[in-house]
Image 1 (tube, one colour):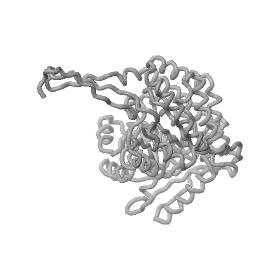
Image 2: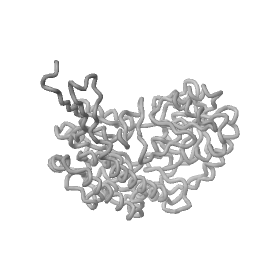
Image 3: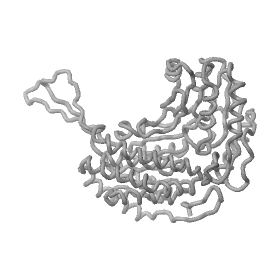
Image 4: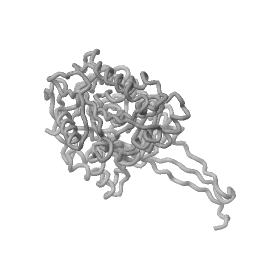
Length: 463
């Protein structure tokens, strides 16, 4: 069975689910399109009512959803609860702002006497959402909240290790009152991707996942002449300048690299520290990581969760070994982790300067890449020496300096004096090999709408 619930802490397979049949996919497409034809004309007030209802259900049943997220992908229960709350906040954001974000826009024209130009934003149809395992609910909600609010329908292909979370997302929207067919979870087979994207009722695909998966699915979408929005990998730079508050920067570095067991696209994966404070920072960072406690993710005292699967552990070990072959130096800096469960002991990796290919890799787990920067310019150089361009952070007591450095970093997002953590009211997305397009806020809701020009012109106006 391709879709299965395997508890990362016990490694016990708890449930399996069969893949969807071709007929089930076709039925889902037909029902989604029929629902869309009515939903596209549904008022923003009614759409907002359903978004608010979904948010209320998440808040009411937070423990139920959080337990399910921890069960299937292994994150700590506290992190799962925070994810559920973030998901509720996204629903509430679009309930409040969708109508304003999509209101018609009057366009300035050279000669108003010759026309009154308006830009309207209309839904396009069915969006195919392909989502990853590291945030079982947030990843889904940040697509369905804006797209349903815009008047589109959504078909979901969630990660194969999250079948119960995926099903619960559909159940959530049904309970919230969403009309049948507008949002459906499908345990699709690999062959169904082309089937869905080639269907004329589907307007595009939104994928969050690996660079490899994005390349394949964007290729299928391109061949079908469908729009794609790609949120891919990241190797975010965490720059600590010589005037930073070292103790606080260390605290945020430990958290920024190890939350969700380091399995976050916007984790602080590459720590770039000014030479003047490097030794002090390193000493404090090692102490901070050594205080992390691996254990049962449902135990409130656990601060380091297992990775999502045994395969993830093995893949990360292989990647570290390859980095060592290229000249990287690796040191264990965390406590020993339990043999039971898919844990990975935190590692520190140095020796990544020069021609070491590993400096361009994304390590999806608790492996810290550490760089010593000679000065501000060198820190910027190291930060930009990456094929990725998702997020980043700059730590300095001088906010103007931080903003100046941030402006020179080639990414989609940069925080000053705080690790990058997704918020309901901030856009999310990157450049380079990290993908294209934006999710959340007004940018996200406009990704899959028709920006139609309506121009009222006097019949006697000159050509």
